[in-house]
Image (cartoon, rainbow, N blue to C red; front, side, top):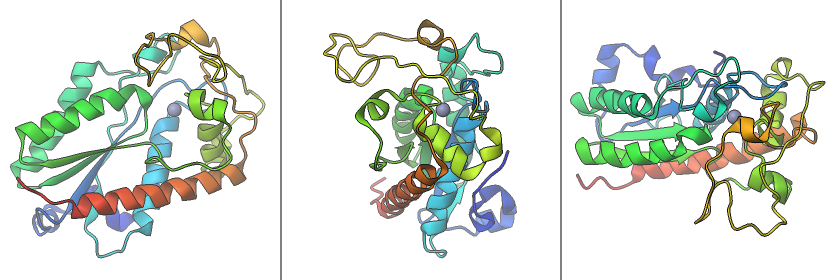
Length: 262
Ligand SMILES: [Zn+2]
C-alpha cells in the first residue's frame, strides 16, 4: 500500500529498544482505521486506506519534528457490510473490528503507553471507533482519542448537496486521489447517485439525524457511488488535502497536550 507517512513517524520502523526509550505519557500513537471496499467504477478498493495515509502523512509532516507522534501500522479492513455484494469488498464484523482495536490497545497499554488516537477514514467504522475510544479509556490506563476524516476542516468550495450526501466515491474522495495517485482514478467511468436531496424536507434521513433509515449501498446505487465525482479536480484535491492536514495537525497537537488525569 502506498503511504505518505514520513519515515521518522512510522512506529513500525523503530526497533523495540527505540520504542522502549519513548516517554510513555509524552508519546502519542495514532492507529489508522479504514476499509477495503468497492468505490464505484472509477476508484480503487483501497480508497479509504490511501486517503487515511495521505491525510495523516501530510498532517504529521506539519508537526514539529521533536513532537513524539507516531503512526502505527493501519487496520486496513473495516466494517463494510453496507457494500457487501460488490466484488472486492472485504468486511469485518463489528465484533471482530472492535476486538482488533481492543487487542492492539492492550499491547500498547501493557508496556505503559498512555496516549492513543483512533484515526478513521471510513464512515462504516465511525460509530465503532467512538465506542472503542471510550471502552479502551475505561478498560486500560490509555488516554484515548477519536479523530475522523478531515478533522472537521471546511473543504472550501464544496457544494451543500455534496457536503451533506457525497457519502462515497463522490467529489472529495475522487479529488483527493486525483491530487495524489491519479493513475488509480478512471475518470471515464464516473457515475452519479444520491441517497437524499439536501433541499427537500424529509422525516427520515440516512445519517446524522434523530430519525434515520439504515441503508445498504445496493438499495441506492447500482454502480456503488453515492455522490457526484464529476466536478472533482486535482487542484481541488490538493487544496482540500492542505486544509484537512492543517486541521488534523491541530487536533493531534491538542491530543498530545491534553491533560492525563488517570
Ligand atoms: Zn471511501
